[in-house]
Length: 286
Image (cartoon, rainbow, N blue to C red; front, side):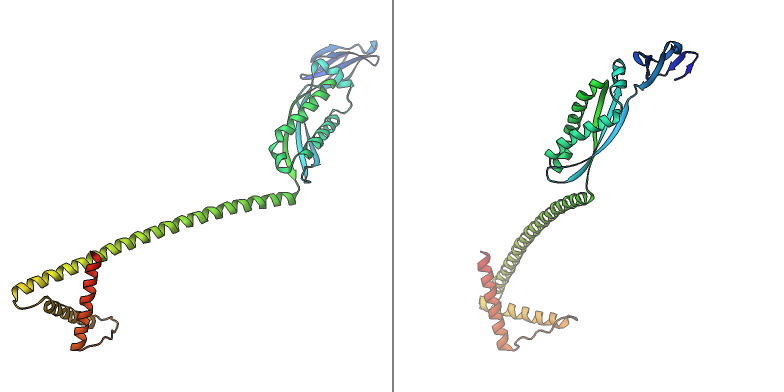
């Protein structure tokens, strides 16, 4: 704003307050105005119409006795049609707004627990904005927007909250891991049961095949060699298998020594035991 030869310049987005002999006369819009100082006219001051922001940090206590710092951002501006009220009625606009913000926050936050305060930030901001709008409109100011930009608990409280959150996540992870291990164990047991079932079927079929083969051998030998009984044929087959087994054990380079009774009588006992075992296997497979 300039003042030269009774002329004044009012900048854009600004209004000036004109007085005559110390009494309010009018509001000067942006542009050039004639101001005859010799007739008592003067500019008392100027008022910006730009949007302004005030950040207010307020310490208060929640319902669960946690002290927090609430940071509110107030966006406001003076109204051109109420410029005289904005200029004359308030000496310190920012202090006035800060006082109202303190009052509303300290009346709202103590009703909420800490977690609820974080969740209801918008409700707190709306309460502050409504109160400011109602109070500041009488002074020629408009509250454009009110934001609760941060709620800061004590550092120890934040650390405790982080530890609680971490413990909860670890608990969930442990449950998921236990559930996964449970599923693996169930699947492993199902696999083992299926494997044993199939192994049993294989053993049963193997024994059945052995019995069928021995039966065919006995029948063929009895037909081709008259006068022999099935018992004689079985004894001969079992003795042959016995000696084949002894030969395989002796031929293996890494076989473990096996001590068994040996002799003609022992062979008869072995044959009797093998025959009884095969007959039992055949009967169980049927």
